[in-house]
Length: 406
Image 1 (spheres, rainbow, N blue to C red):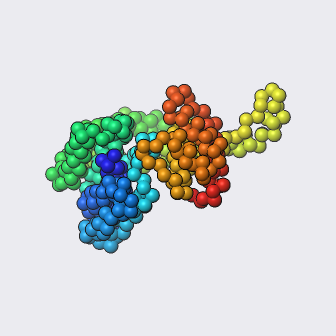
Image 2 (spheres, rainbow, N blue to C red; image 1 turned 60 degrees about the vertical axis):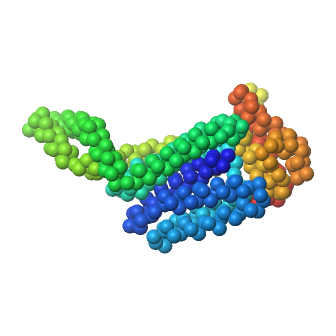
Image 3 (cartoon, one colour; image 1 turned 30 degrees about the horizontal axis):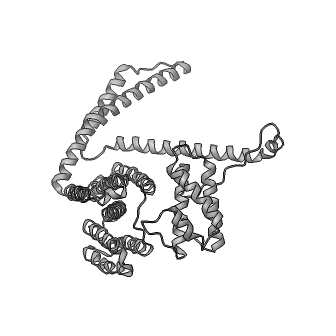
């Protein structure tokens, strides 16, 4: 499990440093995050290894200030502070046991950063992305995939020496790949490959689109001229000249930088996607408002079709899938139980936790939440949304009765 936690820390901090390095590059501030990334992950792993020794797990945190020696400026040192603070928080709250479902959700949210990096590379920051963010993002992807692969195995498998050594070698290969991508030779090869893809794939597609748009523009111009009763001198040669000019323009583009035409096309696609998303969102909101306004009509038809209450608003970080949502609320209950003074050693099961939690919560509520959790974890049948809502309600009641604020 120490290697799993090392991969978790490596993946989370690599994603954070990739985005922070991109932002600092816009202001001309360099960020050397590879060594601090490795130090923070190693320090967190040492704290995880010393967890059985009680408060001794805080001792490796004294090595965290060493990361400031690799910060070349005050903004770069400020970027290191949130990562170090999160490591201290994880050690204090003993967040040493990553779960597969939580890790999958976090990894999917991290993949959204790929869209931000792609947008930044299209609009003039390709060199900064390739030199600063790309190596760290590759480390995030590979370490995240390795962590999810390890979490799918049984706990006994994670402690086998052969399994540990093989995955340790894979982690070393991941780190070597991140270092390799940061070298100038690798970046030149990457630029050449991107230029080849750009000229061989993207430029022909753009030429076809431009050629088609030229024909459409010519057809509209002829139609308008006929409606106005005037004559036009535009012929097919105009389209050929226009397409040839665009071909010459796109052919002179340096392959290492996207062309202005390509940037404008992508900007238009982003704007179009934003407009479509806004229309769908407001359409959904209006449909919900209309459903609320007609609620009284549906209540009057309870004999023919019973009125179904509108779904309670889902919490911000709750998973969409009902099965994962039930397990997520059960993990929140475990965190609340540990905060009140309960203990959840790795050898205990849900029955042991229910007996210990009876000292802090009503036994009936604990058993109901435990039953929902067991069904969500071991049952192969579909979990209804109502189970997730009941699990959320049970957790809120227990948190409210204990007076704990999240």
